[in-house]
Length: 354
Image 1 (tube, one colour):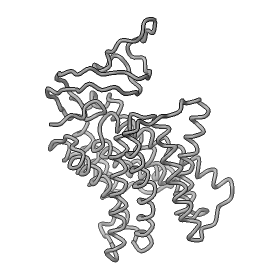
Image 2 (cartoon, rainbow, N blue to C red; image 1 turned 90 degrees about the vertical axis):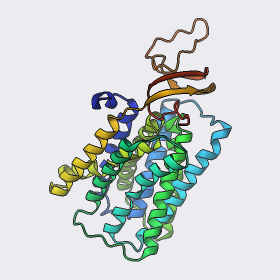
Image 3 (cartoon, helix red, strand yellow; image 1 turned 45 degrees about the vertical axis):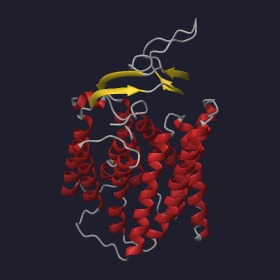
């Protein structure tokens, strides 16, 4: 498919916007670091995401979420790995790790996300997607190590950061298992859990709470840059699969670096131009991928937002309940078994074996 056709996919657009929002958090959070302990700031950002999204659900009177019994442990695993273990391991690593080495190692998350998706969860891939992911990660590495010099110090802090990345990579893959559930509810649960963990760690280490207006600013930033970003990332998981969503999300450092030029008056460097080129190449390889073959959908009954013009939701509603094509709505519905052939991503309806 062409790049324009690929960018029409809602999951691709959601992943790129998610990366832009998250990337923007770095230079904006840097403005707050003079007033807030870094670890406490991470907690406030997560709390802002969780509490803010919870309030959003109350204002919109969002319906209660009843997670299917078979998906409960997927969510528990995601919360424990990404919201609890990941932050703790990152703290252990950062305590003795120079900034250059830590920045480089954090890019391991994108690679591990894809590897787990391909090896453990059997998400389909091809050479084009792998090369695209490597190009994006290479761009992120260029941004992380602008001088070309890396200092890892001792091995144990480095291993702790790699372990944190592995936890977040596992979190990404487990979250995909529940991605058909209401994304705002998932973010409320994950944000509050990660926020409480980070705040607790920071306070135990002696961090002091900032002034109220600073804390509110941090939480507001967390709602936008973490909360909305994660909602969009879950939507991307639903539409393009874990490995591809993770690759697009790895572009976040580039958006952050560009915003830093505008907000913090940081210089435009050759390294940033090179990184942008590598990430553009990787994104182009992904959005122009063509994956088409005959495949079979097993019969399934579930509940999620959908329209009736996507080729997979042609079920009939009850008499008198007319829904026009293209109108988003949700309800429990059944997909009959069908075999057909068309271009597709490894989305929520295309998790078949290859």
